Amino acid sequence: MLRRMRKSTVYFIAGGLIIFVVIQLLLSLGILNNYWRGIIFWGAAISMVALGLNLIYGFNGQFSLGQYGFYAIGAYASADITYRWVHSDPSGIVVVLFGSLLTLGLYVAVTAFLRRFYGVTVMARFTFYILATILAFAIAVAGLVPLLGPAVNSILQVLPAAISRQIVFFVALLGGACLAGIASFLFGIPVLELGSDYFGIATLGFTIIVKVLLDNTDTILPFPEMKGARGMIGIPQWTTWPWVFASLLLVILVMRNVLHSSVGRAIVSVREDERAAELVGIDAATTKVLAFVLGSVFAGLAGGIRAHDLAFLHPQSFNFIQSFNPLIIVVFGGLSSMTGTIITGFFWIFLLEGLLRLYLPEGFETWRLVVYPLVLLVMMLLRPEGLFGRYEIPFLRRVLPPLPTKTVEIQEEAV
Image 1 (tube, helix red, strand yellow):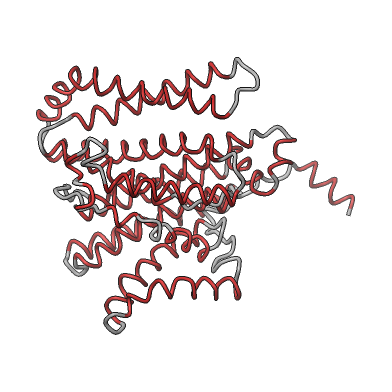
Image 2 (image 1 turned 60 degrees about the vertical axis):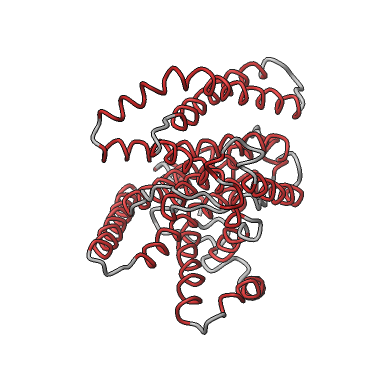
């Protein structure tokens, strides 16, 4: 078994390196133009979003339509950090990075405090956590920006421009993912108490709320640089193939390792039978929140990658119609199949943006809203388990440990 595990790991690493090197060469030599570069980058981003949804829906059983809301939060938050930095304003780095760290610290303190009491209601827990979030970011804005802003700016200015840019980009991606995780945590505490269907409706409403807020970032929210419904421009185009590949690989490895752990078994057990999982000691509410937050963090990271590839963001790109894209990818690839989700994510973007736009008659791409339901209907009728079912490549497949020798001998004697 160990030899087989090593072999599957070697094959995965070798295959990943080959893909990375081949695409990097094609981009460096100009064989792939900017159009196909954008399709590859978009395919990677939508695959990360869909992997997060597969964790929430496929592995945990919580039907969600809110992935594009967290995708938008990650995109706008990371874009705002780099936009401010380009305009010599380090406040975005300080607020998002240190505000997120303060929030996580206060969450730990609030969790330890609430465990001292029995029977705390959901709304009481939600109130404590929302107050902790407000307090953390208020401290970051009012206290840490004047204190740490000049120091952060001085340190990054001393470094070479190329290095400081990569550091700022890393912080932006991390900050966007953290803000998406914080928003999903606060949203998930009360809403995950609902049943799966009602939870899906609530997440759809969340996506609509986020889109409306993005339309009014320059009026209701204090972010004039985002320009509301006109769209945010001036975002530095810092996304490169190494960043895209590393982000997708990180999402795959984190999700694979989580699913192969005791936490992953708890996540799947809640999907199979929530009541039975609670009877054997699994905290179903905490498990559902954990899966929801982790899936949303993946979406926030993908949003940061996508924002710095387009260098332009518009709220219309995150409306509720777009939120069906990751759902279609997950259903197509197969619920509980990471392999199917990744392959289908790239294929879906190639189909919509490559085949429909370039090789079919002009105007045919406007029929996509007719093609979506028809393809889903055919898939549900002919192969409801998806194209890949629950198939995984060997590296992503869970390998059970070998049985002890005595156990094998006893089984053989029994036979």
